[in-house]
Image 1 (cartoon, rainbow, N blue to C red):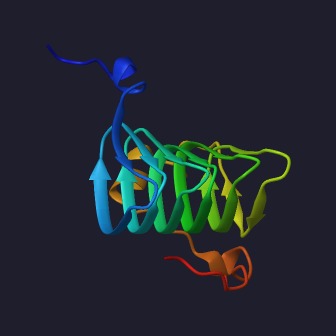
Image 2 (tube, helix red, strand yellow):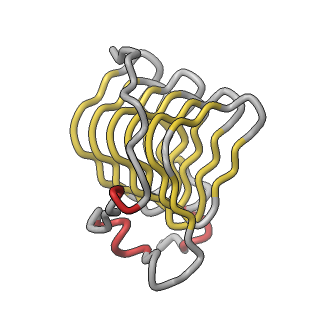
Length: 148
């Protein structure tokens, strides 16, 4: 039986558990939950959830990215980015919408665009969309905290 797109939005496809360490490139469909350490590039066509204990360093491409732990790098989301009250984002965000809860920490630049010609889901998921950050100012200061 073939799953339709709406049912796949509620399906947890993969998880990097608390205490796990993963480095590399990950391409997948469905919800990805990260509660461990991840270093690399993630390309996802649904949602990425970084749990309270999750730590990600790299670049993430997805429809929706929810940060409850630590993310250092660049985020490209075709729909929205949510930084929960326990979340820390150190890096740049490109998305249609950003939601930041009280108590969250974010240090970086953002470009918010609702214009369809500037935010194309297929280019974000392929990882081919890049911004010229020289046009929007200096990059955020370097993060001095450690990753496992």
